Length: 323
Image (cartoon, rainbow, N blue to C red; front, side, top):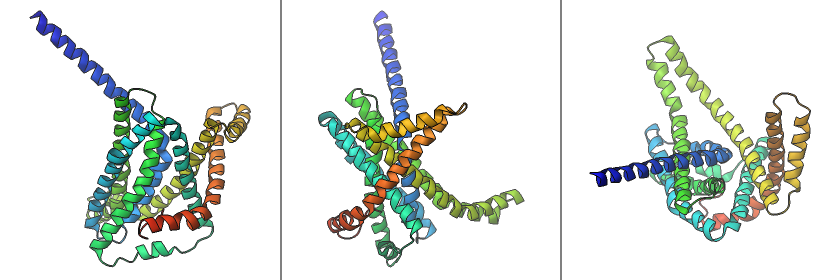
């Protein structure tokens, strides 16, 4: 009997350790996940365009296909690759992060440039030509998964860089947990966004109360504004996060001047404020990182569009370019 009690005691102890480990994984995943806000918002803002032009009953199946592709990108390709990189060449993580940061800066700056100087895009115009819906759906899904791979690589690298050093399996579990959580959040939000107008139409037509019908009408009218706001917030977040990755990376590599200058200016400005000093300092740092990100992105536009873009298009058979 004493042996059985000892065994149950050991099982209880193991269960307690396992529960603590799960809590630790979730806590680390949450901590790391907060660092990828800019990329996540960009992902959520970009994806709805891939269901444009399809029947309403194909929207959710298309999003589900992209979600499965995103999970494959994160868990089957990127997770083992990044863990191997972290184990055998950790020095490469910072340059890889900076490459992703530069891509974010380019994406944000390209949107700003397009707003300031509107111009047509032959690739977008070609993509809007529906043609055969089945063939177009497959092309859209594949294009979305390729774009997701780039964004997922940034997300997973940022998450890994923010996980406290621990065992291989703990890091793997945390990275997997955070990757799945981000994917569910992004594509769950996308599904809600693309179906919100349908929900609004149904509520406006079938609502039992005046308030319900008014809410439905408001949802239909408000969706374009929501998408516009999401795009603006996503662009600002891309420039801020991209710039922050670049300044922090330069600091780690031994060129601290941009990082030190931005934080020194923020500290001086916040020092003269009595209330909200921490918030003001954060805003100034974010603004400084965003300005640096915008400047770098504008410099990268001709490089990406005239050199990297054509090469990428050639390698992918001319079907996909960085969005």
